[in-house]
Image 1 (tube, rainbow, N blue to C red):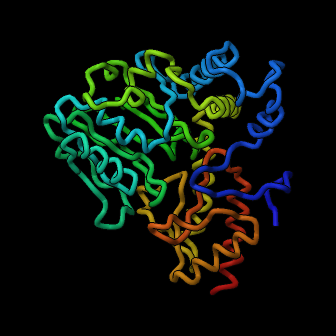
Image 2 (cartoon, one colour; image 1 turned 45 degrees about the horizontal axis):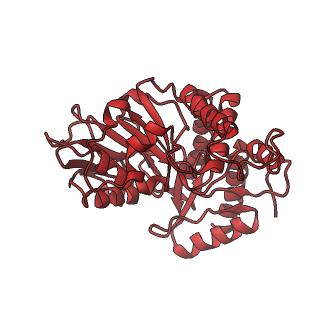
Length: 367
């Protein structure tokens, strides 16, 4: 059964990533697949050294700078490998004293901490592990190491459905944030971060690309000696992200998404839409007799809504019936179970409305 608005060939895809993209973007890309703007070839086929692709990457960066109001003293880097590659790149590039501080709010922050420990004295200064990462710990007075090179967070926790509503007080240390699953979902003050980065496959584009926004003074040749050339931020900063062949098609799609976001009205408008979508789903969960949310109310994510019933059997039944009804990828992450609805920028409000209506019917049938 297909439910997605006028386009009856598409389902409602609630995947956490790779995730839903705006249909308008996909349609434009399809039209340009064989011949990009009269050049006689696909973006997939063109040289990354040519003038045509140079204009694509330049426009993408310019539009991203407009959307996020990125200051001129920050560089935008298009890097391969997704967010997980940055777990190594961060300590390799930022280590001066050999100390990294980490706040552990889920699996991805934990993986970053473990990777950081390969290169530095990685220290956990706060964690929500005690309640299965269902909340964001108090970060107002952290035991930040006096010699810490950075304080690291995963700002939106895709698996557990939590989000920092207030950034940690890093006591003057560089803040590094993985924003993969909340990238461009709302306005941010870039100046509060030393490094803000994310894999694009959740809210911006195809898998295989990470965007790193980094303050210029943090880009240097003074990196750990074992740092590979392809993990040095300076390699990308000095070459306009064209040291080698970048993920050209991914950058092209991201650029189209940036233009789509600007056409929608920018990040303030997206925040309003995302708050409205999330409120509808959370309001239902809070009133439901069958379903319940799993994240602390004050820390709930706008992007990833996690919920359960009172049994694994009923969870499985819901996921199966939802799939049959045209709702894909509602099963929770394998490490936590339950359900998760990822409602990124490209998820239309009618998708959430239709899901809530289905959940109400399921609840009525299973009380």
